[in-house]
Length: 299
Image 1 (tube, rainbow, N blue to C red):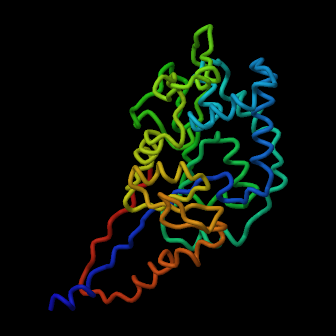
Image 2: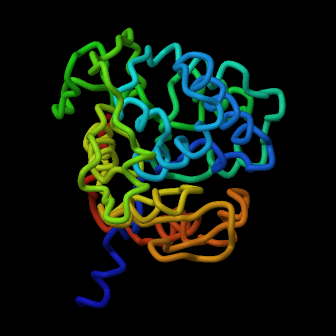
Image 3: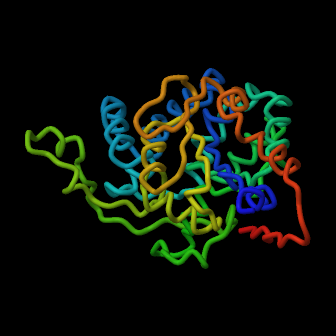
């Protein structure tokens, strides 16, 4: 009887949410957007922040390595700038025309019976442009972006997720800053330099565990039942630490922290076929009497 009862119960799928990074995940690195974005960041550092061009490459590398994004690092070491202006400068001149509608990916996404959410460090305007160019703007429940995690209308970033929403549209203001900037290049030139002495950043972003945990709370996501798609190895490893199932996109070689690895997001069906087995398992189940259906909670 117990054996028969197993087939009378609705089989709960392993996953109920798919969390997608945006840039270089939903479209290939070969699009050229990442290269141009890096160029624009370096130009911003020179033109708007007055950093010597000869120092930009080394400084940018150190900031990206230690803070997750160059923007986050610039803010940490003392540079004061308007976040909207930064995003406009860095993303406003990207070759969006290189992105074309992707009907194959659109079909894959629309046929996946799970919650689907974007999680990007980029701003909401950039995210909307990319999704529109790819023809995917209606494939996701919501977007967790820079503004979501950084409600910068306040002077202090809040840890209260009730104060934050998907793709928040509040105006941006700069934080105050000290008159002197921290010399991170000089810091790491010392033989005993360590990351513990680095100043903290006011910006919340991947790969910070806190940023990922905050995103999960905002969207009401259970990490144990979520697949996290990312092109960044360090973001994948952070996601794994907070309990997410992880998919590295852009290579077929799995690394530490990645449960799956895809050369392209288009390979999702071949690499993770169980995602498409949910409907089949459900239709194969024989029901007896009424079954309570759990309501979907939308963040």
